Length: 294
Image 1 (cartoon, rainbow, N blue to C red):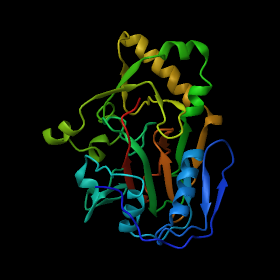
Image 2 (spheres, rainbow, N blue to C red):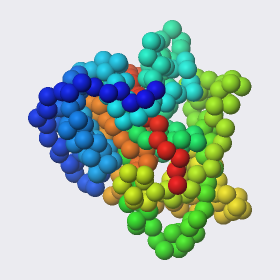
Image 3 (cartoon, helix red, strand yellow):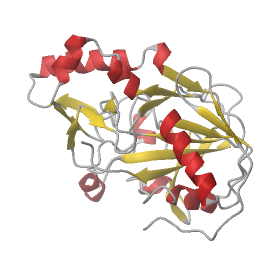
C-alpha cells in the first residue's frame, strides 16, 4: 500500500530533546492523534535519522492512528505469526507476555536476543514503532545499540576481517531456544516457513538516507558469515556482537505510560530486557518496510 497523503494540517509546537548519551531523543508536545503538517513530519523524520530512536511521550492514539502515522514512512510489513496480529488491524503485532485462557495474547519473547527487525527478509525493516498499552511496575525495558558507532569504532583487525563479506540471516535461527519457547513460538506451517526463507546481506550496510555505514549482524537472526569456516564465523560474529553492545554504545529505554518509540532498524539493534512473569506487559508494534541492504 502506498504512503498515505494527508490534507494540509496546522503546525504543532513541540520540542525535540536529545537524551543523555549518544543515542535517542524525546519528542515533547506533539499530538499524534492529529495529522502532522508536512513541516512537522519533516522535523520528525530528521530527528529519526539524526538520533536513530525517538520517543513520543503520552500518545493516546488508537491502533488505526498508529497505522496511519506509520504509513507516512512507507509500506507496512505484516508479521509471519498471524495469530498475534491485532484483530481488525493486521498491520499491528501484539507484543505481550499475557496469557488468557491458557493461550498467549501476543508474542511474549519478542526481542529476547539482540536483533534488527526483519533482517531475515529480502527487504528488511526501515523502522518499527512500539506503542505502550499496558506496562509492568518493574522491568520491561528495551535496549538499543548504535550500529553506526559500532562500525566506526571497530578495531582495525575486525574491520579488515569483515571487509566485503556477507552474512546469512534466518528467522528461525533461534526460534526454539529458551525457556517456554514452544508456548510463545508456535510451530510454523509450511506456508509460514515459505515466508521466512534465509537471506544474505552485507555484514556492513550503508544507510540509504544518511549515507553512514553500520554493522548489520545480530545474535537474533544472523547464522553465519558466508565463505568462512564455521568456527571462524562463530568467533568473528561473537567479537562483533560483544563490540556492538558495549555499555557506552547502548540506550536503555524505561517505558512510561502511553510512550510510542520509533527506532531505525538500519541504524540500531535492540533487545527486550525482560519482564517478571507475574507482571503484565502489552505493546502494539507496526513495522515499516525498508530497502535491500547494500
